[in-house]
Image 1: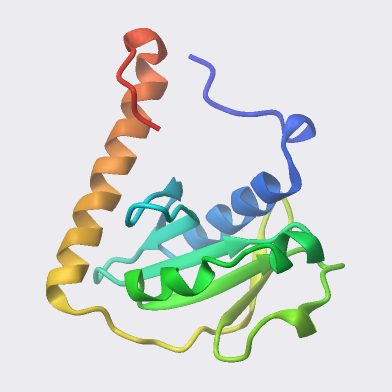
Image 2: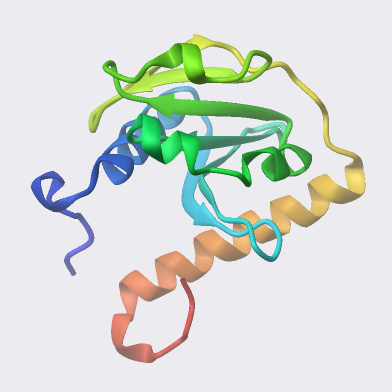
Length: 153
């Protein structure tokens, strides 16, 4: 079963998400990519910690990518901490204060600025943990049986 992508064929945002996910794993957080917390929103990376904490990380590949993102503030109500992940050449002065910052590449990331914590309400946390688990399980199933036509992303 082939489950890895060749970094040479990945777009910069995907490479950043890969490095971010590796770094989060080193911190003890589980990560999934492209999770939909609510209709019309899709986060690049969502991480779940051992105590149920939820982080959202938006990967931005360029200034134009950041400037065209008008939905990021909608992600704040679905996580305890919000981060941007960019590469070392990104003009970080564009990124809003009061958000976290990671510098990443395809292999790792570093937290430059810890995101402030804004704890989710318990009911919202429960919903997000269930969405995270369902998303992760469906992704795993699609890797195990890609021809099943399950219709999951």
